Amino acid sequence: MPKPRAWQRMLSGRRLDLLDPAPLDIEIEDIAHGLSFVARWNGQTRGDFPYSVAEHSLLVERLFSQIAPKAPVRWRLAALLHDAPEYVIGDMISPVKAAVGPDYSAMDERLTAAVHLRFGLPAVLPVSVKRQIKKADRISAWLEATQIAGFGETEADRFFLRPAQQQMCRLALDLRPPMEVKAAFLDRHRALMGQLSGVNA
Image (cartoon, rainbow, N blue to C red):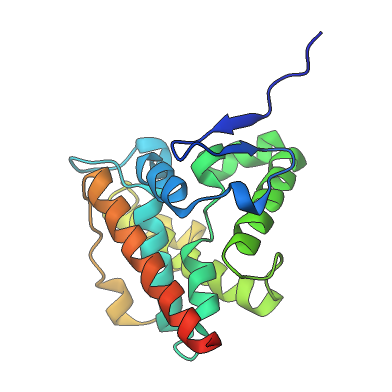
């Protein structure tokens, strides 16, 4: 029998092998486009538009910058790209990830490493940086849960991380058309890459 296809053709024309992803087959336009059309919370959110992974990524990068204001630009870029593999594997909610098991984690790790290398980051982030990004991710989940995903604050407190800072609690989530979110994601990526180039010049 022929070997099952394990690659996906991207709109850029790149062909990304999910089992052995090459950094040179990763384009930021593909990531931004894909993430702008992938819905968080399996689409179970209020509003006229899905709350996309791209919008979530922008929020996580913003929260990370508040949690670690002195962090180097490269770690802010890592925060923006923390869910980048979902442009090809989608956003699985935690219960589904647990059911799928270690194969999902292994594929996610391979894609993450390729994305990082493509944009000048280490394949594996330092543990302390991963921990800070995860904290921002959990705070963003609390904000999303309570504002658009139907959770009460008491319930959200059990599963996610309530922001310690009041200004974070007051952050209002944005629900925008996918192409508008895509443009915002690309703008932020461009700005961070520009800052990173300036630092390394």
